View 1 (cartoon, rainbow, N blue to C red):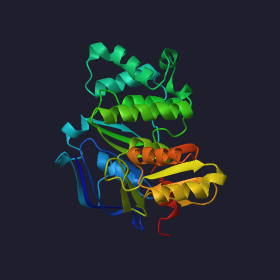
View 2 (cartoon, rainbow, N blue to C red):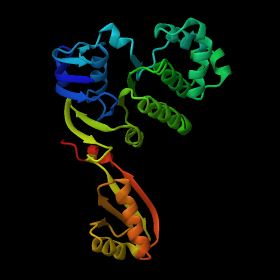
View 3 (cartoon, rainbow, N blue to C red):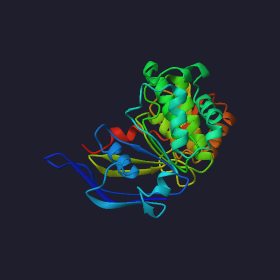
View 4 (cartoon, rainbow, N blue to C red):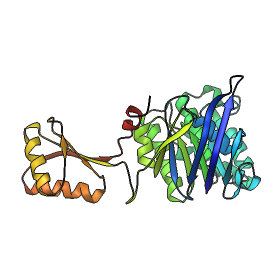
Length: 300
């Protein structure tokens, strides 16, 4: 769906490279997370994907077309990191404006915009207020609402849950999963790694303008999943021995945490069953991609 071929982009008199030979392919219906430190080039890459910036070299094609092709833009939803909305508009007027821009049926404007607001947890009275009275979390919510109007095939989200409360984070996650379920192709830039892990099929790590690593998070080819089991500290050594006897090599630090490579649900279930049959109480089990390790282990 998206093909980025050897794209570079530099800024300023010193021609500081924000992107340096980035190549990336994103399949139709895939949700890909862009992760990396501040200033790594993630937002610049999103801006190039959207046609807001032109690469100095290299090419980007979306569904075989240029990124600024009108047929591509008509199928695209976008939420920026910096919410430069017209703060004098009411919430209702803001969503109505974007509904019409997206080609929505004028006769359904009120109904569809109210539904979009409800999906992100904005109450009806909030729509009567001007955006300048909104909190940061409310602005994030209405930004997600406008980005997902008319169920776009392509969705680009730049820090969509930044500044929201825990309920807002869950709401944003649900909207992303909803778009993913219907087959949208999604590119997400976020520093909230637990949320990236919950919604993305794959992550790419960008550092100093270069794509340094890519990791698959879902399916049989998942490359970064671990099963972590927590038992009583006094049971840790025995649990490791029991699992080893079942062909399940586990690392333990002696604190009651045991980690196993491979993080499928089937393997997690096998681990729990093995320990239960050996009468070793399991206090907690989780499968995660441990994305924080990408930050800790990145080249200096």
